[in-house]
Length: 194
Image 1 (tube, one colour):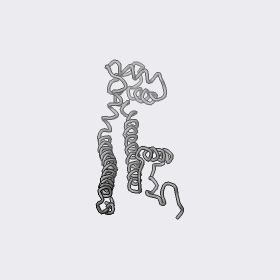
Image 2 (image 1 turned 45 degrees about the vertical axis):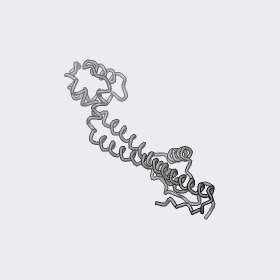
Image 3 (image 1 turned 180 degrees about the vertical axis):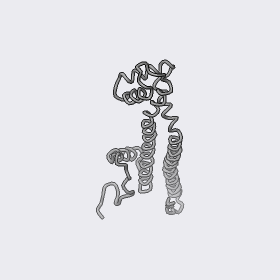
Image 4 (image 1 turned 90 degrees about the vertical axis):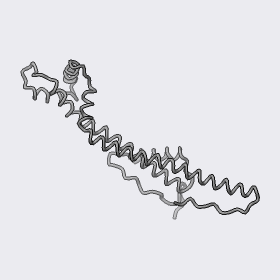
């Protein structure tokens, strides 16, 4: 076995990343966590690896929620515009006008201005479109919220576990050092294995 500066062996397997995710970003997150937590020993290094994976998953789930809303935006825009628009003055059938203006919304300022003008007539703004996109994907977003809650709970538990582990070890060290100072027989420190 070759000596390595961080550890004699690999503590965790490589983090499974999506094809859109960066190994460098994950490594940077792990490095920042190591600097913050300053793991002492293999147990704490395992906690840091676990925490890095949890934080990464939380960030991924949050990105997914935004992606779900963004992909629902065009449909929401179409729904709102169709509901609010009367027959267009140009003589173009309503469905064709709605389709054109909604498609052009993303690339043409004039279409965006038309839609914003329509929304203003009903004292609405772009947030009405966002609200419709969220409403239309509510059950999916709710599922992601449950997943996020679970991951955040796991993260908090892991952070508490490091503190408990350190506190338990510190308590054992204090007991041993007190015995040494008082001249009592010294017993070996208990292992913190679980």
